[in-house]
Length: 330
Image (cartoon, rainbow, N blue to C red; front, side, top):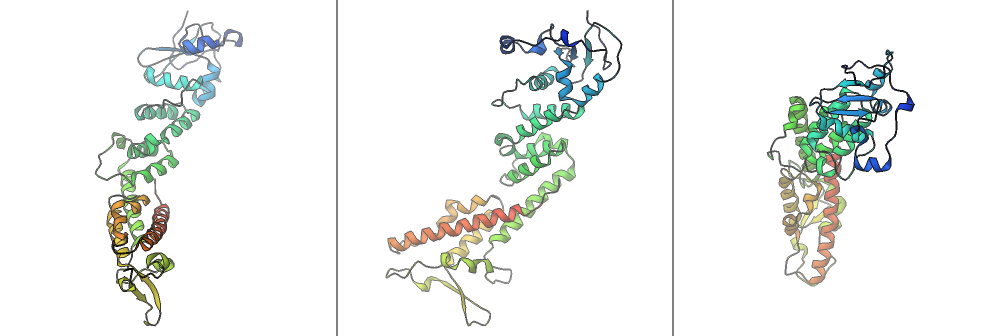
């Protein structure tokens, strides 16, 4: 006979009464679905019963562990705990508790939300860690960054929120909303948008070729050998094609640079407004701006391409460092 109670647990069955499923049974039917197993019944909102071993659920949940520590009267019946979550959610929880989870088949974002809510309600730290790992999968934190960010903020997964916010930078702002935004405050969403704006400003400032007053920025001086012409040649690669930058007294040449690099960097700044990724610096349309003219010899063209790729790597690193330095307030 099974006696039903609601969150009022009686004395647990003795260890002799709790049997372990065989290997063949584990492969055919979950142990928590077998009425002859377990010493506790968890009854879901939709009336499905799960036959659970108290020691297993107590190891995963501090709430259940506390309940089982309370003194109870003697009884030979299995206690029933009524829960407010549907059976599909509790089935996932128990799959995890009984070590039956398949990593190759992660839960959906909707189910992740439900499991995080269960983990918070029943103080299931292991389930929270499991959901954290699930959210960090590329298919979520990278490809569904806004949804992952909202879920992470709602459940205090700060590290996941930072990764998702970083991935969100490469997604157009008007790419659509996420229903999970209902889980967070307007302030948290506003902070994400402000973070994006600051990252755009920082990235553009890191690669801008000239100051507001029109002076060439100092960081370009460090890479002058990559921005000028290849070694002297008898082809049409002429020093007349270069912009010469001198010091304030006009007594010393600081930089000789091909004008194409100013065009490239300015176009990159504009492109970063909508494609805020370091790899944007390598887009073919931008690189085409600095390809050596057709009237240069093959040697100069090859050398110029080598210089260009080396300098673009510098640009990529500067964008990455600028974005990394921007702080996100959760």
